[in-house]
Each structure stands twice: as C-alpha cells, then as structure tokens.
Length: 381
Image 1: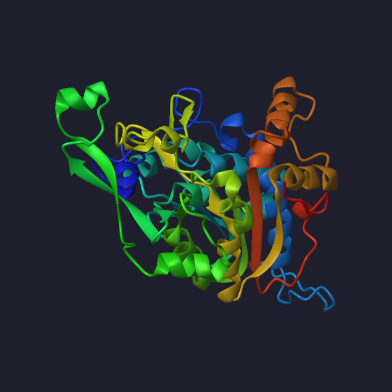
Image 2 (image 1 turned 135 degrees about the horizontal axis):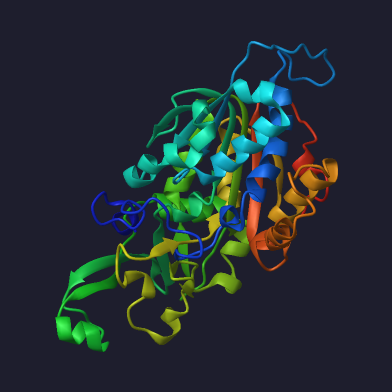
C-alpha cells in the first residue's frame, strides 16, 4: 500500500498534483467547491480568537496579544485547494487576522507541492513553508482532511489457530483470472505470522476479539502520526476530518470482511472479494488507483489524549457544519447562490459526506471552549 500510493516514481499520489474531483477517481468535500473552506474559516476564526489571549482559562481576563502570529497547518494538503479556499474566506472576513497567519502545507507528493503556489494564487503571501513533514513546533491549528484513511495499514485475519497477517507476494499467481494466466506472474496475497506483536496488542488494548474468518485493518502509522503531531503542537487545536468509526463499530460483524477499498474513476471496489475468493481488487493496477481504509477514531483519540491533548468534540460532519452555520448564518460569501445551496446540501446530506465523515477536534492549553462546530449536536451516526 505504501509503494502503490507513495513511491516517488510509481506511487498513485506521487505522480499527479490532484487525484480527486470529477476528472479524478473519488470525490471529497473540497471538490464540492469553496464553501467547505469558507465554513472552516469560521471555525478557525473562533479558534484563533481563543489563541489570541495569554490566558486560555475563560474565567480569567483575556488579554489580546496583537503581535502574535498563528500557524495554520494543513497535513495531506495536496495542491493546496482547501487552504486556498479557507484563506480567501479569512481574508474577506478578517483582514487583520489574515495578515497574522502563517500557512504551512504538508504534503508527501512532490508533484502536488509543485502546484501549491499556483493554487494559492493571490493568498500565496501567507505561505510560510511547504514540505513533506510537519513543522518542528507550532502554535495554532492543524487540519487534516482525509489524510489518515490513506495511510498504509496492516491487514489481519483471524483463523482457528490465531491471528494471521496478510502479505503481498509477487510470482506465479495461485488464482486463475484470464489476465494473470496470460502474463504468468502477478501479485497475490498469502497469510503468515504477524509482522509485529503491536498488532495483537492493538486489538487487546481495545478489548476487541475478532471471530474466526474476520478480516480487519490496523493503522499503526496513523496512531504514530497523531502522537508526533501532538508533541509538535505547543498550543492550539487539531481538527481531523475523515471517514471511519469508533473501534466497537469498526471491528464488528458489520465490517467482518475489513474496509480496505480501492477507487478508480469513481468506482469503488470494496472488501467483498473475500467472499468469492480470488485476488483482491486493491492488488490490481498498483499505482493507478486509490487505496483506503476506514479510520479507527477510538485509537486516534486515545493516543492523542495520552500525549496530553484534550478531546473537544467528536461528531458527524453534518452536525459540525450545522453548528458553524447556526452560530454564523453569514458564513458564506453568497448564501443565496444556487451553486452554494447545492454544494451545502452535498456536504450535509445523511448517507453521503455528511454522515460518513467524522470530525475529531483536539486541543492543548486552550481550556475547554464550547466551539461553534460543536454547538448544534454532538452526535456520531
């Protein structure tokens, strides 16, 4: 999965500045239009107001510090479209605070990084850094929209004799689809002992018992990433937006075949292959399709809290955006515009982006504020 997505020469994300949208393979909230960034700008405005004080305790006097600078970090930024939409909204709503922002774009793909300055266009003056790694230390807000789901995972399967890990091998395939017969060789999966005891420990820590035959994905890299991000955040917020579940729902009969999925030209090929045998779809055309799995938000939140962060909210994207709109109905530049109304419907619609995507908000040294995005309903479906 790491090679297929991120290898510098053949990786799916490495070879193109953008993979989503109508001309791509999948659709994200950013592809709906600038409205998603405009709504995030309202939440950022409140977060920066909280940071714009030397004392985070709401019971103490709040002393503004007009000389302070705020870091806005987008991890998994791609070509910078979300940050561009967000910064334009911040500049329109609060030019003074806009001038105090420092934007840091974090993106593994060199092709995407090369396109960032052109995407930012007139707001490129706020760009402080662009690279593959998070800044060493920052004070502000870190946003990661659909980042964790694309991190490489371990896939495991429970057998009668215990936990096994799924590996990819290359050679004469044991399956017999026609293309493989013609070529003679191809990638195929085998099962073996777990590559690390951390996989069994991960499930034990959650109190999860997989039944024989169940498959599951374990994202050790996502847990390591949130720990690293928490250590670099001196003061501020982390906002994670992704699709996934609490562990008790992710590792359950409803997902007994796992969640590892590929996307090509807006066609999803999920884990249902295991019922009929044969090669899984995510082995086909490596480097030419997206590969993703659902996020275990229980483990992400637990790791963040162990590093000293506080959970401020966990809710569906629908309720997060409704809270922002309810607290600030003038959030949108053109709320009556038909395209904006249709875009908003797409972002909020149950069964679509609104309910499949969850929002996890974490903070450190900011108190326990009642954020706008959490003001409508704190609910996860």
